[in-house]
Image 1 (cartoon, helix red, strand yellow):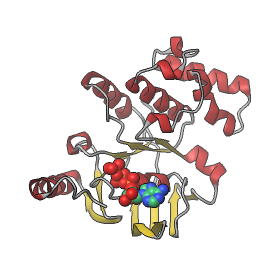
Image 2 (image 1 turned 180 degrees about the vertical axis):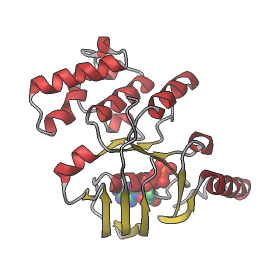
Image 3 (image 1 turned 60 degrees about the vertical axis):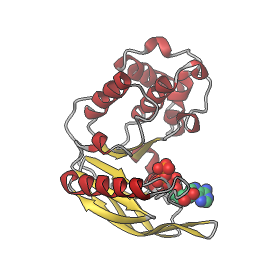
Image 4 (image 1 turned 45 degrees about the vertical axis):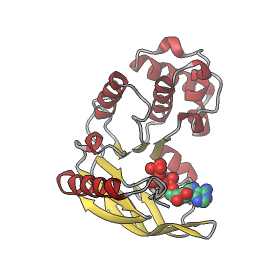
Length: 245
Ligand SMILES: Nc1ncnc2c1ncn2[C@@H]1O[C@H](COP(=O)(O)OP(=O)(O)OP(=O)(O)O)[C@@H](O)[C@H]1O
């Protein structure tokens, strides 16, 4: 997993998304080719929606999303090999009863045969020293363990870019540190959504999304202190009922 960084880029061109008559993302344009990109924003600002658009899981109402030049919504087959997503909630990602089935699913979807898929699953489990998990019932694993299963399933697909939606939420500190080391070694583009700015200090670029728009875009030393100051200001003033809508 310490192979050289692969050149990658993504581009949102005037992307908008409305759901149930409400603007969730509004005219968002951004192009990036950095390998570590952070995304911050308040609850409900549109970060997870950005992640779903990035992976082509939802059709923009306007504009296009291209990752490595591929229109990820229009070309689902190419998108499968291009982008991966680690969902905020592992239970939204996991659909199979055992770890090996979960890891094989995406590969079979990609057109691999059963033998190819099971060889790859074994190799991925081995790279994480988790071969003993192969037959394990996923529902018996802890949240942190499930997160690792989801990450392994994404990595098995060898996507060129991975969106991580709050990968550390609900994990204890040792598990966070282990996961951080694993993520650090991944040679693909990582787009990391986080509430805690300290998790994004190693990113080379930060996108701050606010009310579905790009509020600020730049290096972490510029964006994170501004974001942090604004969040503290809001936290000082806000009533708990005043969640971002
Ligand atoms: N299926 C849906 N239908 C209508 N509105 C939706 C739907 N999914 C999300 N939204 C709305 O879109 C907005 C953005 O949601 P999103 O999950 O992208 O926010 P977020 O920034 O990831 O929030 P959080 O930090 O709380 O995870 C919210 O106002 C949410 O209520």
